Image 1 (cartoon, rainbow, N blue to C red):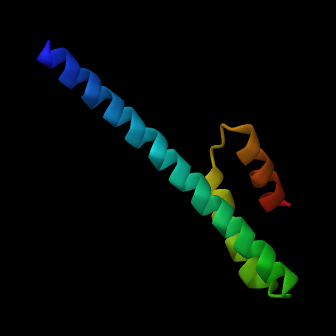
Image 2: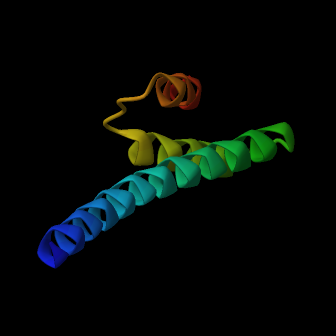
Length: 76
């Protein structure tokens, strides 16, 4: 009985960390995209392009619809 409880807990813990890491990647991509937009608004085109490229690299490959939209905006 204790082994089952421990195994269930360990399995749920592993899945929690897997999903948490995925969220971190998308958060970093969103941050890079937002930074690129701000730099673009200031007229700093080379730096903005660098931030957009960072967002693109972080989002490849993309599986979620919301992140596909962000990828499309960054590639534009």
